[in-house]
Structures are given as structure tokens and as C-alpha cells.
Image (cartoon, rainbow, N blue to C red):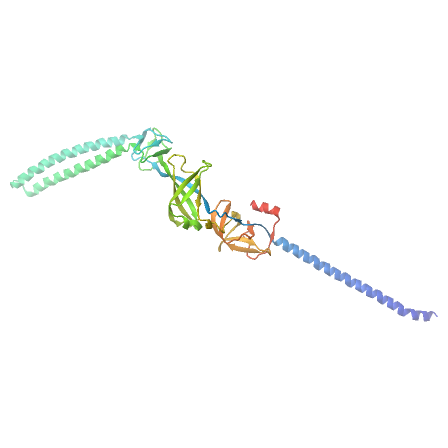
Length: 395
């Protein structure tokens, strides 16, 4: 009985054990599969996070189109039409000065006097030397005339007569040398008075009574005089606009010390050559200052009115967008796939913190601010958030 029961129950138990074994095996496989899947997903996430952190974060800005008004604004420097330092031509001590800074002077007006006792003594000696040479000339001339008469009567030899005549010629030459030396010293004595070379105003006085004066410009300048009735205005024009700088081109000038007032300047000439360092053309303009409203040596903003199409296609950007490399000046932009595109550009005007790009960009470009030097073409980047953009723009 018992034997028959065991015989009939054995297959059922075997099937149950088999089912449980299958379930356990399936669960084990599922657990292993899930572990592998979770490990793979974690690895993928870690890889993505690592790659995301490795990307360079950049801030971008849209180019600002320049106004098409055709006005070219450039900084300029004002100088006097004539500006000359005044030096002494004779040695001595300053005896007296008659003009100070800001004094208008005329051509030939005495600015100061120099006490030069050595020159005075040399002048008196030269006068005495001339008297001595003239006396010697007189006696040698009389002697030569007498020996000529004696030679005509054959009373003396020709050799002796020629010697006396030669001494007379030497005496004549000594008189001429003494006269030239006396004239030189008289002119040198005349330099004891320092005079103005042209009409103008005294802009500097660097001497005082009793000061030792050295001639020939070896010492400091005594005075400086400037003719301010006309002013020369110098402007450096970018190469892009160099061809437009033609004579008689007019410009409007604004001075910081004359706010709200605009002056007219006329282009007189250019250097006809570009500076190899800055790629700019030096232009010289003339400003009428007959009313003495403007001061030389100052800063001015010069506005050239050009053709409207001259400004078309140019953009204004911060100066920190530029990359200077062997290929030339470039700007980094970001395309729709967040990849870098390096573009060669042509720079126009320099506003200091901003620059003008006249070629190489479009209004739809996303320009990278403060691009790192390691940035390469086609490199993937991460765009910063707007709050981060403000921080990058300050750099």
C-alpha cells in the first residue's frame, strides 16, 4: 500500500521540483539581466555626464547691425598750426623775461634778454682786431705802391717788389677776416634778445632770471610758442575707408570742452600710406580757430559723412570676440548643432571696448564671447544660460 503510494507520488513531486527549478532559473536570469542592464545604463549615464562636463561652456551674442546713415566717427588729436620751441643762440645768464604763458606775441617781439659778458668782450676784441688789421692794411698798401714805382724805374728787383705787393694782399685778406669775425660777433650779440619767430601765443616758459643759458639747443627750451588761429586735426582712418578720404572732404568735430557745439573741419591731405602696424591712414584736417575757442593738444570726435552704402553690412560687437591666429583675425560662431564655426573677419573701426566688423559675419550668427584660445573648428560646445551670459560679457 505504502509502496504503491510512493510510486504514484514520485512523478508529481518531480514535476513540481522541475517547475520550481525553472522558476528559480528564470528569476536568476532576470536578476542577472537586470543587473547587466542597470550597470550598462549607469555606465552610459556616467559617460554622458562626463562628456557633458568636458564640453566647453560658451556664451554667445548676436551681431548688432551698424547704422546705415553713412557717418564715420573717429577719434582725433588737435595740434596748433605752428608750434615751435624757442632756444637761445648765445651763452650767458637770463637777464629779464617779458612774456609769460598765455601772452599773445607778434613776430619779432622780444621775449627775454640774456646777459652775455663773454660775448661782449669778444665783440670788443674783434673791433680792436679790425682796427689793427686796417692799420696794417694801410701801411702795407702804401709800401706796395712805393715798390711798384721803384720797380718801374728798375731801382729794385722784381722779386722784392712782388714780396711787398704780396704783403699788401695778405693785409687786405686779414681785414676781410676781421670784418667777418666782427659781423659774426655782432649777430651773436644780437641773439642776446630772444624774439618770437611768428605771431602766436606763449604756451610754455621754462626759464627765469639768473638761470644759466646754453646755446645751440643743448639746454631746455626757454619758451614755446603756438599759432592757434588754425588747428591741425589728425585722425587715423581704417583701411576700409581709406579710399574715401579725398581732399576737401568735410567733417563735423565735437570737443569735450565744448558740448553741444559742432565745428567744421576740412580734409587737407593724407599720408598716402597705411601704417603697417595699425593698418590705418593718417589724415590731416584744418579747423578754423580765429575766435580762439579751441585749445591745441586736446581730444576730438570727428564725424565724416560718407555714402550710405559705406556702412551697409557692418556689425558692432564687443572687442573680446576676436581670435588672433596665424590664419588671421577670426571670430568663433556656434551653429544649430552647437558646433563651433571659425570665420575670418575684417575689422573696421575700433571704439575701444567695441569694434566694427565690416566683413565675414551675418546678422543670424551666434558669436562666442571671450572664446578660449584652445577652441577649434567643429568642436562641440555647451551654451551657457542667460544668467551666465551676463557674467561672461563682463570679462
